[in-house]
Amino acid sequence: MKQSLQLLLGQHLAMTPRLQQAIRLLQLSTMELHTEVREALDSNLMLEPDEDDDPGAGGEAEVAPADIPRELPVDTVWEDVYDSVPVNGGGPAGEFNGTDLITRRAQTESLKDRLDWQISLMRLGDTDRIIAAALIDAVNDDGYLELTLEDIRDSLDPRRREVTLEQVEAVLRHIQNLDPPGVAARGLGECLAIQLRQLPAGTEWRDAALTLVAGHLQALASKNYAQLMAALGLGKHELRCVIDLIRSLSPRPGAAVQSSTPEYVIPDVFVRKENGAWKVELNPDASPRLRINTRYANLIRRSDDSADNHTLKTHLQEARWFIKSLLNRGETLLKTATCIVERQQGFLEHGEEAMKPMVLADVAHTIGMHESTISRVTTRKYMHTPRGLFELKYFFSSHVHTASGSEASSTAVRAVLRKLIASENPARPLSDQKLKEILSGQGIRIARRTVAKYREEMAIPSSTERKAL
Image 1 (cartoon, helix red, strand yellow):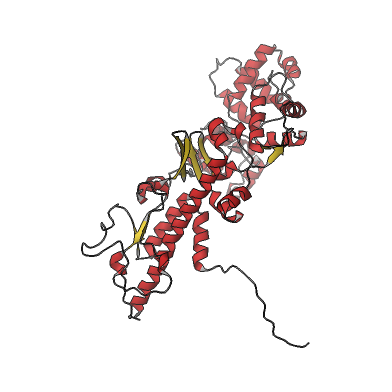
Image 2 (cartoon, rainbow, N blue to C red):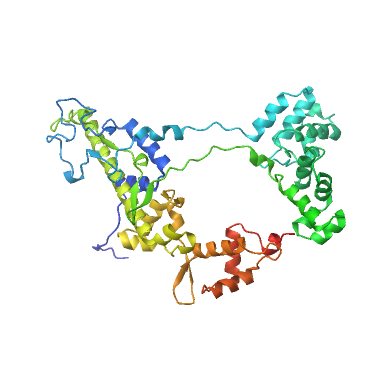
């Protein structure tokens, strides 16, 4: 094969460390951003929080803290220098430590912790305590026993193999009397029966409810009310009272115990209406203010090639990059949020039914950025509006066609479906086909399978399951 040299021209994007940092900061949530800023402050001596409106508050009186000295080495263009950058969209400076209280991990109690504590207060023998520990380990987060009694007995230490199934079941009864009610049940029927037995003996309809959950749960699930009335010997009104009592119970008793650390959401953007116009502002408490530490910056000497001087130069350059990346993040977030508000004023004024279809490309084209950038800046970023707190991703949705040839947002269609189902006759709920016909009458062209898809996404049962007595 003959070898030759060829000159090719082309363009490609170089992922420089500076660009990688900007992309990383752009996709961080507010809580993660504060963590990143703390790490930067700990690792870079040139960075310091801008905690005061007075730029000289953190430096010596004779030093001009707002300016980097002119004798600094010029390695790149100096228009990229940012000594003190407010990244809060021009609002008042927010205290960086404002979220310290929120970021503290809340102490939580797991279901296992609660059961172990209650067992420790009971008078049990050594063997029974070992059995109790094995049973509690087999209870899942919903509060149900996942293993059979045989499996639990077989899992005990070989020296405890003399333990009988009767012993294991006796200890299980102790655990089933603990809090939360219904815990350690082996199925839904037993879970509901435990809770019913713990009600006062004089509770109305308790006995009938116990009979129902013991042998007729399938009929209740399929809404076969005629079969239930015949089996229990009850009229329609009495059966309704029994069902209401069962519905007051918890099918997932473990859910009553907080087993995970709560996640706090800090709004990144505030939206409010002033003088008839919608105004968008970045949350100052969600946007840390940083500046260059001028006392350290003044230690740099142009002609000094020592290791210490080189370290100072490196830290200064990284600090400038970090501050500019924060500024770019805030500007991009503000532009994106402003574009969303301009396109979704109908939602802000009238609610979900007025939501307009919008995709990432719409915003990207408007503000002159790539779709991937819009995707990053709208993920885990939240907007506080008069209608509530929403992730920026919420405002993007696909569309369906209308009879007039225009488009309707899938979010708006879901809102209409939810409204129709909420106002239906419980005894004769609307089928997916009927809902399709109603929407068609309103000019929304949609398939029945799409109606079913939207209904399932909203966790709304089918018409058969929604049917009430």
